[in-house]
Picture 1 (cartoon, helix red, strand yellow):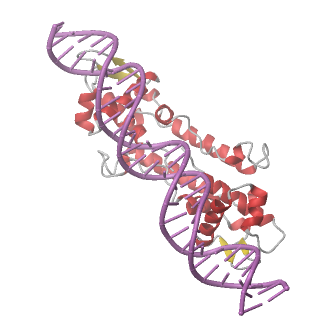
Picture 2 (cartoon, each protein chain N blue to C red; picture 1 turned 180 degrees about the horizontal axis):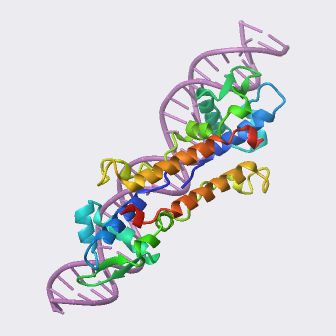
Picture 3 (tube, rainbow over the protein chains, first blue to last red; picture 1 turned 120 degrees about the vertical axis):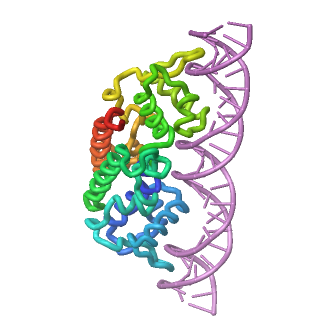
Length: 131
Length: 131
DNA sequence: TATAATGATACTGTATTAGTATCTTTTTGT
DNA sequence: ACAAAAAGATACTAATACAGTATCATTATA
């Protein structure tokens, strides 16, 4: 299983670069040169982050992206959910009506706990602490 | 992301049934009646568990499967690795040579810790505590 | 020796992930 | 005014993993 897919990974790297960059705005062309990520793919990723409010974008010549929050306030878990959708340890059948003992299933409870723990750990990781 | 895929889920259910079954051996036909899992798929899953040493199988008429250990000694994490291969929170690029700062990458360290924690939690869940 | 079971293995359909391609809109320097 | 350089929107394709089938071989028992 993969907790972190490639687009999240690329997102982290891009944001790290943007955070460290001296310039006010960073363009995709600039990022691509540095990070060796396929340009159209990175463009798609940044567009998503921008829609989700993690980046601010500026069109036109000289345009680009900048962080919309301080690095300390950008959480890894937000990048994950932005790129991969909401984080579920399992959508397994025990959680659904198919589980023979809906409601009191022990595995469900245990997995829910694990999920909570995981989410809180991922919420402790900020962009800042990755710089 | 999915920590638990469907075959692991089915595996847990099958083992629960086998553990509770009064009979010494449980056949796939019997399991299928009870659990509404497609027969050839369940057969494949049980064959895997058998190869991995979690079940003992007996061929021929009247044959079937039984647990090869006591329920308290069958760990969820073993089922996961049997069905899904080894558990990796991420095979992300930070862990590989592609990561710009191999060896000292902070994300890698944090994810490795999360992975360790996850594994130990999953090792605390035994088949017995799911009965 | 027919039957009912598992073993082995190859195949198929579907969903997710990863990446491309293209056209539109916006901004700015000349 | 307008060409160039940026992002926005959207549709498409390729690769991989997940879910499930199909079939033939082997084994044990009644």
